[in-house]
Image 1 (tube, rainbow, N blue to C red):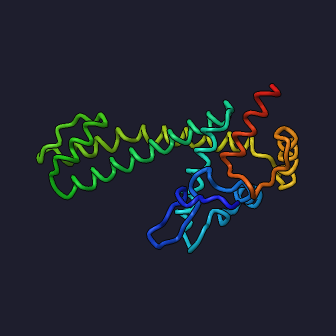
Image 2 (cartoon, rainbow, N blue to C red):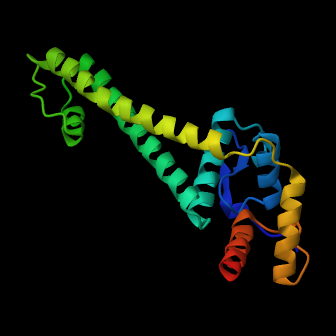
Image 3 (cartoon, rainbow, N blue to C red):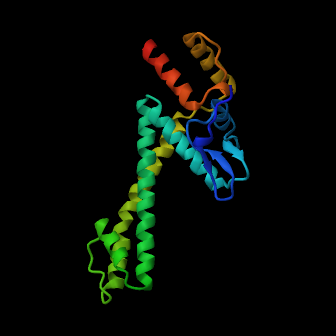
Length: 204
């Protein structure tokens, strides 16, 4: 019987729908890995490249979270740090842009919450904002370092060529473990990981 995954779909403003969780059917997940295309995430409509990239990032983060592997945990940690630094830099930039226009107390409070303890008075604003920009460069450096670590890890650990038959072999072994034939179109990524983790635990 076909499963209802509607609650796990992301609906975009243009009424396009994409998979954005590990309720994604395993077959679609495999197609993304094998082809390096994000189109298997599309349920309907024409989502933007950014919407697809965000959905895949959410799926991969959840996958790392539920997959019992120190390496996957390391990758997830890097992803979260990069996302945190990116958001922080964006907020700082928005506050600076707003204060360049005029004095705005909420923006000053936000900057101080981030540790920028300047006066930010009308008389000192320009100089204080220049100092804020200079001090914030360490966040840019941190983000670059984390992105470098992430890129280095991916380049070192991604197989040169992943084939769909590689997953067929894994599903064959898991089918023997479960006692029934497993097809990639019949289970979600979350269900696959759950079976795989039990298999690893029993055979460790």
